Image (cartoon, rainbow, N blue to C red; front, side, top):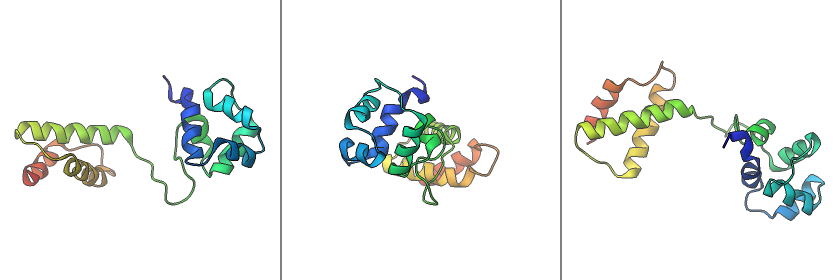
Amino acid sequence: MKEIDLFPRRLKLAIGKGSARSFAMQCGLSPSVMHQYLTGKSEPTRLALIAMARAAGVNLEWLLTGEGRMKKGKGSVMIDRNLYEEIIESVEESLMTFDKTLPMRKKLDACRYFYDFFQDMQGVDKEQTARVMRLLV
């Protein structure tokens, strides 16, 4: 399923813990129309999309396509998914090479560290990852 086809899921995330009924009212839409959007039985109009993005405080592009940052403002962080996947693979390969394991929390911490480190480089240096992982395990 394409990311663009997951609009109902993104809309639910945008609404958050509040009720769909009250969110519909905030957007100037009827609860039944909102239900149609949430179940994927109907596609919102351009004006409805704008109203929903504004009411939820999310970026219109994210709501529509799933691309870009979800939330507006400085607190949003955009993750390079390909880089993160490459880092995870490199960490897992290092652990297998050393025949070691790490608790999930430690693996996540290592991946975050490597993401910060390799973010501005031209990809993941697997040898450097292995050297650091050897110190961790």
